[in-house]
Structures are given as C-alpha cells and as structure tokens.
Image (cartoon, rainbow, N blue to C red; front, side, top):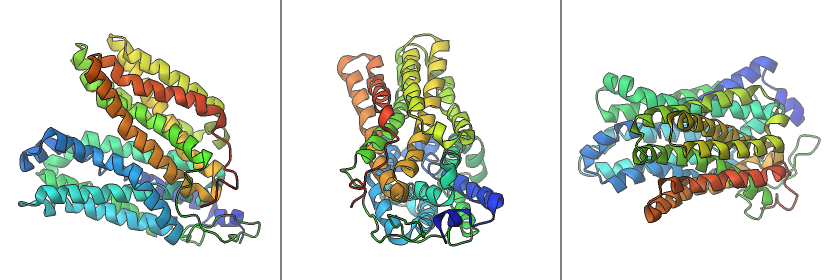
Length: 414
C-alpha cells in the first residue's frame, strides 16, 4: 500500500473526523493535569509547609521537563512508533496525576508529590513529539488542520483546568487531592478513544526515514534530534519565541500591574491573554496549510507581537487589555505554526525535528522569563521584565523568511 493510500485508510471523511476527534482529546491532556495544580497551591502549601521557592519549582517543573524530556520521546517513538508511544504516555499521565492524591499522605507526601509530578511532566514531554508524527501519517494533506485541532484541545484544557477547578471540581470532590484525581480522568478517556482507531495506517509502527514510492521505508530509523540541523534550530527558536512571549505575559503581568498601580486589571488582562488563544486555533483550523506556514504570516505576527507588547507598557486600561489580547492571539498562532512546520520541513523525521524544537523552545521559555525577572530586580524598572519577550518577537521576524526550508539530506542523518 502506498503512503498516499495508507493516509486515506480509515473511511474517508468519517475516518478523518474520527482522527481529528482523537487528536483533540489528546491535546486536551497536554496541559490539563499541569494546570490543575496551581488553583489548589495554597492548600498544598499548607499541607506540606512548602516555601515559595518550592511552590515555584512544583509549578515550573513540567515546563522544564517539556524541554528535557522531548528527546526521550523521540527515541521512544523511533523504537515503538508514535501510536504506541502516545497510548503508553497517556496511561502514565493518568496514573501519575491520579496517584498524586492517595500517595501524598504522611511524612513522605511532599517527596511523592514532586516525584509523581516529575513522572507526569516527563510523560507529557514524551507524547508531544508523537503528535506531529501522527499528523504526518494521518492527515498529511491537512497538516495545519490536524495541528490546530490538537492545539485547540490544549488551549481548551488550559482554560478548563484554570477556570473550573475552584468553582466546580473542588466543591464536588471536597479536597485538593481529589481535584488531581478528577483531572486525570480525561487522559483515561483519550487513551480509550485512541483504541477505537483502526487500520495499519493509524496504528503504525516505528518511524522509518526515506519512504520510497512503493510506501516502504528505506531502512534507517531516526532516534535522537539532530542538533546540527539548521531546521531544528530554526523551529526551536520560532517555538521558543512564541512560548517566551506567552509565559512572560502570564508571569509578569500581575506583578507589573501592581507595580504600576493598576491591580484591578490583573484578572481581566490574564483572561484576555488566555482567552484570545482559542479563536487563534479556530482560525488556523480553516486556513490552508500553505497559508499557515507562509513566511509572510510569521513575519507579520512578529511585528504585531512587538506592537502588542508595546501596548502593555502604556499605563492605561484599554491599551493594557488590548496588548494582552494581542500577544495571547499572536503567541498562539505562532505556536501552531511552529507545531505544523515539522510535518512540512522534516516529513518522516517530524518526531525528531519536533523533539529538538521542544527542547530548544521550552528551554528558552523556562530561562528567558528568569532573565526578565532578573532585569527587573537589578534595575527596579518593571518594564524590563518584558525585554526577553520583545527580543523573542524580533527573532521571529528575522527567522520568518527561512522557516519553510526543508531539511537537507545531511540534516536528516542521526
């Protein structure tokens, strides 16, 4: 069976909708168990007498693991295939998140909480590279649609965990440990939904590079990201640029608004930033892949992001709210572009290219906001906390013309 025929296996439009639904459910679980914890952090702090530094480590640990664990995901995908890697990863996410409830009683409770959070974050980091690989196999002709679908699930998951934990889930379950168990259930549902997919093209085995016209792999299986590849670094810097803007906004807007005598805008500005991401994913779901991955669009987004960041620094409600919405929208669009591009520029090596991208991008997203905070501390100027975000938007603008360059054969080597 040729790859084109294999890509159609599964029942035409009905099969495509089925795969899109599964991708959306998987996307829902990329962040939902991570963001289930912050709303109940005061109760966690009281239960274990944790310092502010320990609480910060607990909440940022999964982000760091998204960088460190991605190459592990690439190796696992190369050995057992993206479908099996995704299924096993969902099971680990569900079990590790749920066990953060019953296994954190008693004196070793804090240690177990950190350990299980580590395992959960590592599983999320492992399954993220499966998604570009599966989009390439399941929806190669609609890469932007597939990427926007699971990214929409990711963004909806962020909103649900952040908005429903305190008013709905906590009253239903009664205790913070029950909250963590409850938010592990969507991962179980996603794993079960994955089992409903049928066909060799869907339940595919290990990734093989160099697929010929007869649909057979030419032999060698890529394992680790290729750090000598220019494509890997361009993708990592693009994804990092989007993530730095997003995490900088969420990290510093509350304290920046307090420092500039606008504390009443904290809630509305964070809502604007995060809510604006959802329509971004819906818009890109209906655009052709060629438009989504256009260098012109990436360059325009770099310019608009700079303008949005500048609006944040105008000490007035309307510019601040508008700026928050702008950077929320543009960072989401840039992230979807970054997640789509490995399918375009790396094809059968999408799992390796995306794993390298995640390591670079989330590494930057972890480190550069720390730099912004250090600049604020050193100078006493709150606006300098956003300097790394301005720099990130600028490098997106510079990178834009080269983003669709396909990996050369030398880049594809292990």
